[in-house]
Amino acid sequence: MKMLPTRHLIVVTTVAILFGNFLARPGWAELAPPAKEIPLYEGAAPGSEGWTWSERAGGSPTNPTVQNVVHPVLLYYPADKAKAVGTAMIIAPGGGFTNLMMSYEGVDVAKRMNETGVDAFVLKYRLRYSASSAGGGRGVARGATSQPAAAAGAARRAGGRAPTTAAQAGQDIRELAAADGQQAVRILREHASEYGFKPDRIGMIGYSAGGSVVIRTAKGPAETRPNFLVGIYPADANGDAPPAGAPPLFLAVASDDQAVGFRGSVDMFLAWRQANIPVELHVFQMGSHGFTRHGGGADHYLDRVEEWMKVNGFLNK
Image 1: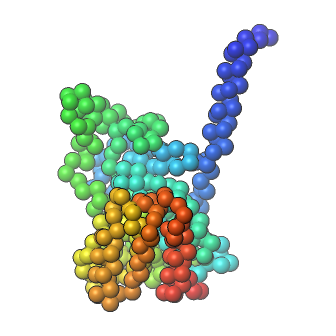
Image 2: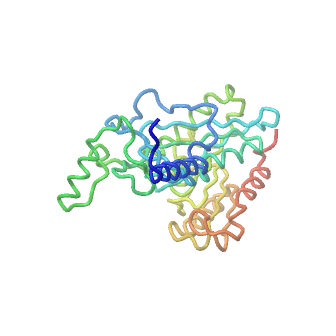
């Protein structure tokens, strides 16, 4: 057998080591798989019938994300039946309506909810089309159409700013994402007995853009509202009066949040309080957006969420 030159062996060995280290790092392969994936719609989601591209993984091995969601789904993470309390939580990750942060604002939260006996459902809602892998993408997914990317490339060559895609022209992605949130509540309420939780104990927690989904879902039709809300550094928080019968609300944000700020959450707290609806707000001294600045109370925000859920009876069997 012909032996490779020593320099080639060194290269091959180095590549193998690097590839092995990559697989060993936390990422998509290490995210706990859901027990079930639940489509929100039969066929194309209303409003996105013309979206022809494919979803793709993005981010990094330590911060996996999803981009270009066309077909929204719920990822089901059930609690151990021996300690299930009959409560469900829909989790809406953030990511600026371009990405979904699938670990620390998604699956990690689902597993924490499972520890408290809560059945968790990570919501993959519809996003703006991203023509490039900037922000952590790993290239166009296999089977994706090239038309949107070609159009974006043509716009760049013409000196213009690349659009998302013509298929989303004039569409309000935030409203489509909110419609996905409402549909998620509808489906879980209809199938509560099948999954073993109570139809009047469906909560929703959202982060940043996912917080916008939560807020808009809460202000939608009564039959598709969650029974309780948790907004973590939520986008679109404001002081608008809540709708009649709005559910209890928990809010957490950092005073040094450089993206959405804290004032919207304060205004929302005051609006809920004025309407005499149960509400709790935590403005942590430090944490920044995403609670990425560690060392303060924001590190333990889920402890506060759990306490609030206990106070309001959502962790009682």
